[in-house]
Every structure is written in structure tokens, then in C-alpha cells.
Length: 179
Image (tube, rainbow, N blue to C red; front, side):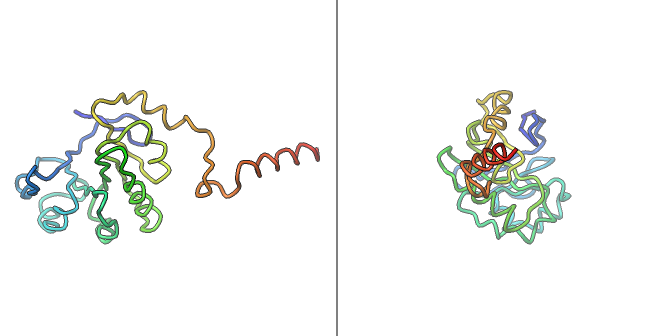
């Protein structure tokens, strides 16, 4: 069984990611593997009712491609157990925006999983965008990847900190001077 990183721990992955065939065709609902499946948004949109009828909500997840619109899945949050976001290549950062939109604009509270070309160097940034599960590329070391979450002790960007580091240092120096 494959593994993923979920909530900063290595766990077994009991989900099967379903992808379109090389010619772009999607499998029929009755052709899907047994158990939990993470299906592409296009399959969800085409076969939503059949998928709901064939499985419990705990066994259905939907993954979004970089060009997917996250708003398309908002009405179905209660019908799926997780949302995956595909990173087809390392240099494609559109998935970060999708993660932030799902968490911040649309209020998604369930598991948000990064799939595809997921590498150690991306994990801390994905975490900051709301991801809590990561399906690392098969050739990567999970134990090494876990270290990525603790490499940075401070984030400088204004989206994370309202006060820049030089202001925080200045305030600390002023506090010491007045003591």
C-alpha cells in the first residue's frame, strides 16, 4: 500500500487516484476500482449522481486540475470526503491558488491533498496555502520530506505576518531599552 503525508505524519494511503486514459476518455462508474476513489472533476461533473449512488461520501474524493475552477465543487462539499489538487509539474504553481481559494474563500474544512509532481521543497508552501495531505512523487523519501515543515522558523510575507521583521526587531529592541 502506498503512503502519504497527512497532518505531518506518514500514513497509509487507502485512496486510488483515477485519471483519464491516454486518449482522454474517462472510465465509467462501474469500471472504477473498489474502495475509496479520487476522481477528476470532469468525471464528477459527468457522473455525479451515479457516483453518489454507488458509494458513500466517505469513499468519494474529487481532484482538480490546475485549470479547474474551485467554485464548481463548492455545492458538493458535503458529498465528498476529500479534494485533491493536481500539480502536474513542479513549476506549475496554480494549485497553490486553488488551495487558498478552497480554504479561504469557499471555507472548505475537509482534507485537501496535493497530488502529482509533489516534492519536498513545496510542502511548507503548500501547508501555508491550506493543504494538509501530500502524495509525494514515488521516488521521494518521506522521512526527509517531513523535515521541510520545520525548516523555516519565520515567514516574511505580509499575507502571513502583518508586521515585517524589521518592525518586530525594532519593537523588541525598544522593549529591552525601556526595561
